[in-house]
Image 1 (cartoon, helix red, strand yellow):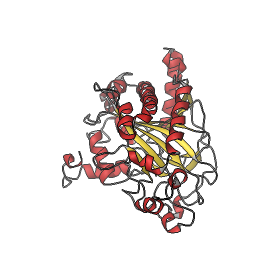
Image 2 (cartoon, one colour):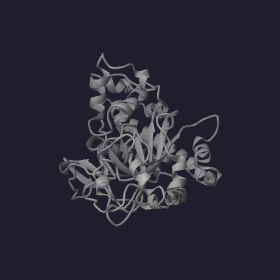
Image 3 (cartoon, helix red, strand yellow):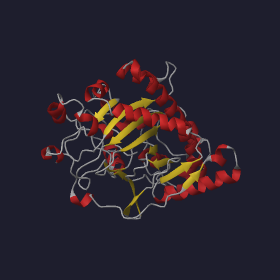
Image 4 (tube, rainbow, N blue to C red):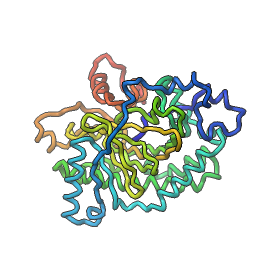
Length: 383
């Protein structure tokens, strides 16, 4: 959620400058204080750097009653979610059933990874286009301006008969020393999928359609898991950890540490989000906006940085299987009287975000315009 989907390799220039400087990457992987020419790659236009001056009053939805089958609690949760999704597409949940010890263990392994020397982290470097999972600094291979001030470790998750895909990724990319980390993140992703499917059921109830419609649609879904580290920045007023964007995926489940830095655009202004250690942040993405026939909003959000303290988050981007056609429920279309978006697959949309436009507030309308253009290249060009 606080990241664009497409990821790439660390700054080539910074890596060359620091390749013999030991752990220069372990604190700020992008530049040192005097490298102002490199800093310019991160600076955003002044008009985009508007500060948030008030806190978002988003619903804090308790899932405990829903998970226990309580009818009254389920209806209340669905009502709270509907209000949030009509307004800004953002809410938090507690009583989600995820063991807080598992969350803390995932943070512990994240801390250990990002403190490693650059040479070790780069063993898992992303090598697009054949390998989109691994370590990245600033997405600099794809973009040359308005770079995000962060390091990331990204990997895919789906249920596979061949074995635990997350655990296998850690062992194959980083070695057996990271076997325990892989096991922790495998369990974390499995827990996040259970939360995601519960949210899908509540979203269906809130929209007044078959309560199992979205749960069934996403049962064999795919996810992208990303660990984000936002280092302290000498000029926090000039850069973003991640710039303003809506996630292209369906829903995003985020856990953030207590530093703060997540902002949501609501009521024509930016508002801060209070971190809650026992809650999970939920925001809707563009793909679910399509699946709701445009009824629910895709959350516009951003990640800020600060001068004194690094910030860490764990983000679970959930999507349907890539070949599934994104079509809203028939009952919803019948009620609305028309289709808002054309039929397309998640693979179509994902390909667009990787080859045409970085994720921002205009990604979905620009994709639809591109997708309906008869002169566009065939979709399989981006597979």
